[in-house]
Image (tube, rainbow, N blue to C red; front, side, top):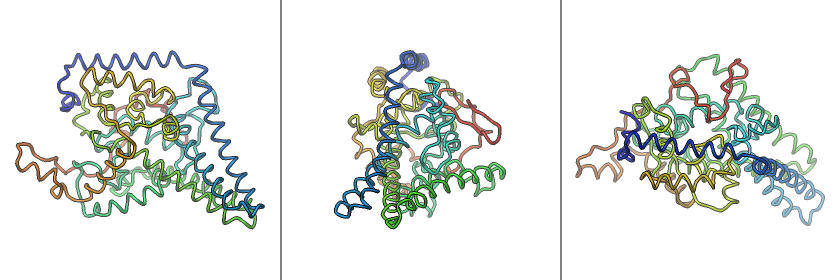
Amino acid sequence: MAIADVQQYMHLTDDEVEQLGRELDAIRAEVEESRGDDDAAYINRMIRVQRGLAAAGRISLLLGLHAPATRRASWVAGTSALALAKILENMEIGHNVMHGQWDWMNDPEIHSSTWEWDTAQPAEQWKHSHNYIHHQFTNVLGYDNDIGYGILRMAREQKWSPFNLGQPVYNALLASLFQWGVALHDLDIERIRKMEKDPKEMKRQLRQIVRKGRNQILKDYVVYPALSGPRWRQTLAANATANVTRNLWSYVIIFCGHFPDGALHFTEDEIEDETRAEWYLRQILGAANFKGGPLLHILSGNLGFQIEHHLFPDLPSNRYAEISVRVRELCDKYGIPYTTGPLHRQYGQALRTIVKLSVPNGWTREDRAYVAGDDAPPEAGLARGRRSDAERPSRMRELGRWSRTRAGRDGS
């Protein structure tokens, strides 16, 4: 079985699939050739705005310490500015810079090989777990650990266990502590539990995580509060509130990308002998967009264009809006579903999936409906877990840089 056997585009001939791939390649080439001063100005402007927000937040908090009459207003304003700064740095700047979207500028400060973002996960591990594993094997069961982050059952084909009954609770904890959940993402807890993880690699990764996490804790909960003197509690509370706000926002945006209705999951058999054009098709079928204005798209890292981001992860994010028009035209032309909707609806569908899949398939209406039909319900026999790097195909260049600097390996 191959990806071309997936029902949503079985109507396409092999030639049509390859032609679609060529048309998407043409879009990529056009955008690559047209990158220039406007794109460079955009990312530099985003960085200035982000740093300005962070500075304004700190100044507002300090002013509130010495002006009792405006203390509460200063705290709210300062905390809001810090939260926005963290969101902007993680979503529109850090995530996209580490994809290599701005490497063409040859700016050593805005480059995927040097950027370290303001969150608990080390950049090196993010580039491996996200750029390579998630983007190359999007929504493939047994490969992509973004399907539930190792603790949530997010596909009906995944094996159910009593542990899944707690999914609503695990989900709430994951949302509020999202940066720490992401920090453990590349460890692959399931492989560690099964004693399949290389002990040396595990220790190396844990050292990186402890070092990065320690620095984040010291920065937000020791250094800045200490600089505030006797009002250190207000600064500590502001930093904690900003971090939780960033965590919740990032979680919502990311869960809207692959779990709303219409975003498909795939099996290992379905990516066997997958061509580049079929990889494009899998990205379209495995991703979901959401609608919104320019500000919403900036604050979400332009992940409202998740389909376009998965097709072209290393193209500048400010170009996704214009690219989306052409991608949707191609989907209409070839009869391929293009999943999109309002943000609240997309997240609502993802949340519904989390709750529904906390119980066995047979307890839900979808599987009971199969009794009157000819088809069988999805087989829930796939356990969580993913392949090791040695068991996966090599990385596609377009997915962005990833490296193993301490191990002397480089994926660029």
